[in-house]
Image 1: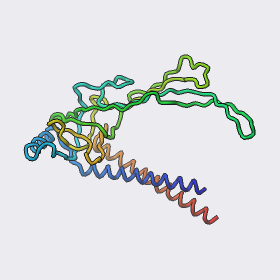
Image 2: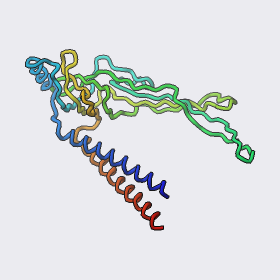
Image 3: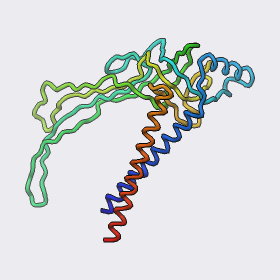
Length: 247
């Protein structure tokens, strides 16, 4: 019973930590100004003239459409995109024979999987709004991905080995070209031009397929659920400890 109580208290702590991250995200979105591409170009030009482009470090938000001159082609679905991640895994079954303490043997068939190949590929892209376009560096950003592939291919001949291949599973997520996005990051200089990137201090960078209002609503809803879960797990964990002491 104590173990269950400890597990519940640990879960409550994790929920509180996640809730705090959601609250920090809400504060950051609310405190950040939305800029147009044209305005960021102007700010970059002014800073470069006054103190040098390297001094530019302004937290900001932009909204627009993902645009690229030379899009990536994703590994699995060949989707034209600015970023993608994928996993290719082999699913198998194997025969396991175990001997217990009394010398009795038991043979079972168990299923498993192993990753054959995986990757997370990102490159510079532009976000175009009604005034122009701004460069975005997605390295280190939290991306709201779009599912672009999920397929399982059966093996033609599993064979008769102890470990038999059942098939290959391929999954993929991407940030497609043409997708409308909301980006929160830092305006910095990239080769003499303004760009949005992750903060040098390590603050979160967000690339969401939701608009700002939708993202706020979704984050608030998630934060409420996490707080309810933290309270419920924490209260139940404490109750189990009290019950154990009293009995």
